Image 1: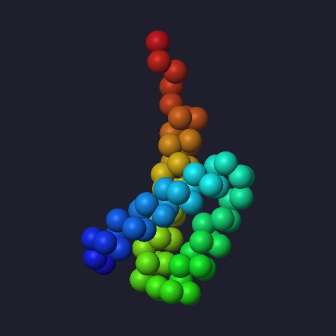
Image 2: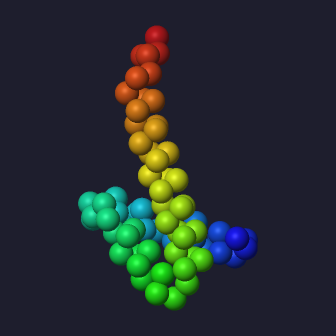
Length: 72
């Protein structure tokens, strides 16, 4: 993918996740992806990848924190 598509997808993912955090709508990114996909399938795929990577990272960090031994 081009650097432009990656940059735009990353920015859109950041903004979508902010809205999701503010509203509690966990599927908001799907709505945004559908909107993007009507104009550019390439951007839609890049956006969804960016969101999923960030969501997976959040889950992984929560899991690690849960299992991390307390520091002394």
